[in-house]
Image (tube, rainbow, N blue to C red):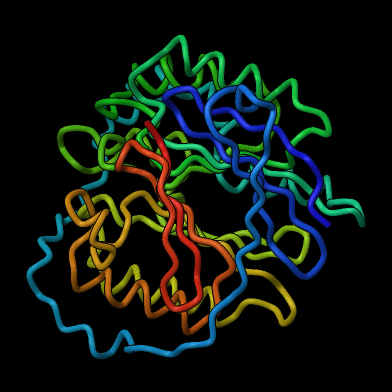
Length: 303
């Protein structure tokens, strides 16, 4: 059963979800907190049953991959000085440990999905403060990327952490194209969120949440898709499946102008159908939009 949940949508989209046993349901509002008429629109997305292409058929070699170089000793010292005291709060492994200490009740749980909060500090403050006041409290927050505008250590400290630390709710992030700094190594992101924070998953309340990096050039799309395929394939029986990333797939015409490359997009979509994903949350396009492909619903968000 879907219960009324909060929604915040003022130039930056935040989705509030409530998961019950055996289904994934999301409450989607219009403008306002909630919308000005106090109306709520409920959409329940059912999994698809189609099987499309396999990763092994993906032969695109056009993706330029950057050879990762670890930060120098001097750079590590700089990162420690700027971000060191914030890693305890935002390291992904520590976020997962927090969830394990607070399992959901039999009635299900809420979580928040948001994205692209990089360029309006006042609004970013309002969003976090509003989420922290919601009751029942959301179990966690998933950010679909672009938490800062240029990926510098000082931005992560002074823009992101300064506000996000005002709530104790676990915080998960899918890296965005603005988050990896000008050298594209994402040293700052990886230092703050952890070396495994580009592609990872966690289980909560009989739902597997898989978060992948489709916004940087730190890994070939083939390897990212293999990770995604494996994580979904090995999901425990009876669990729901939710996938989050930054860029939407280019196979959806209305998103193609600002999307992931076409070839990995095709495989990505096929995996969602093959593994019967319940929901896909994305960012990047700075607008609220939905689509259904192969029985799977997708929602890019963020403004």
